[in-house]
Length: 52
Image 1 (cartoon, rainbow, N blue to C red):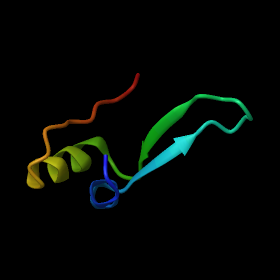
Image 2: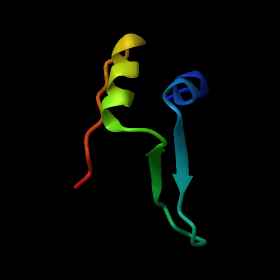
Image 3: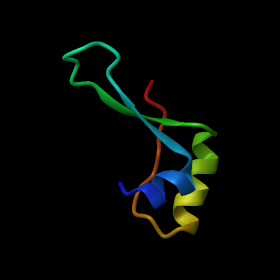
């Protein structure tokens, strides 16, 4: 995902906090419904869902 898309969707990429960790995640800074509406508005072929 390029920087323009991450910025438009307010997504933060999170790397593992321990040396040698291979964890990489993405964190939304607003609600899932709002992020999905913005993705649809931008014509992006993706949707967010709750991880639980």
